[in-house]
Every structure is written in structure tokens, then in C-alpha cells.
Image 1 (cartoon, rainbow, N blue to C red):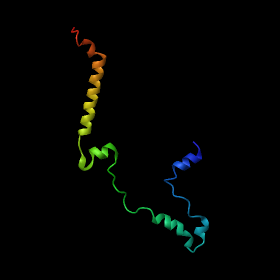
Image 2: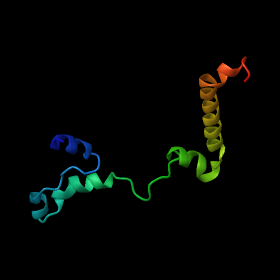
Image 3: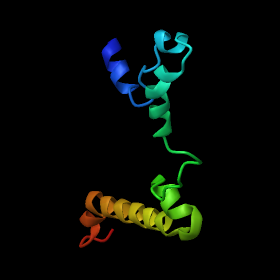
Image 4: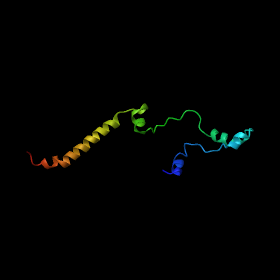
Length: 98
């Protein structure tokens, strides 16, 4: 993997380099304005809860908790299995009993 690909993927995680050694060693503090400006724009407090936490967050946790998706999955698998059995085996015995 190339360094540029890794750098591009991590670009959203690692903040840009805006505090240089010359800004930090000047002692006046005015050179830190870009750094203070960058961090003042970041959201404060806990992260907001999102309802889009995948299927588990949408159907099994919180106020909308329900077992309906699990029941639909079981019913769908049964339907798929029966259709497969019918096409492979049962269809041939429909008019020809043993």
C-alpha cells in the first residue's frame, strides 16, 4: 500500500498540521490563532445518538424494539427452502405418486 493512499484514508482522522515549531516557540501566543480557530470549530459535548445504528439499532434497541425482522427472516428462509425443494424434487412427484 502506498503512503499517499494511507495518508488520504487517514486524512479525516488526523487534524491538519497548523501548529509549527516557530508558532510555539515565539512565546507571544498570537501564532496559535489558526490552531485555536481550528479547535473552536469542533463540536463540543457527547456525540449525538443516531437512529441509523444499522439493523440492530433500528429494530432491536430503543423504543422501536421488535422481533418482527427475525420472524421475517425465518419465514423468508422457509419460503426459499420450500421453493428450492419443490423445484428440485417435489415437482416431479406431483402427478406420479409412489
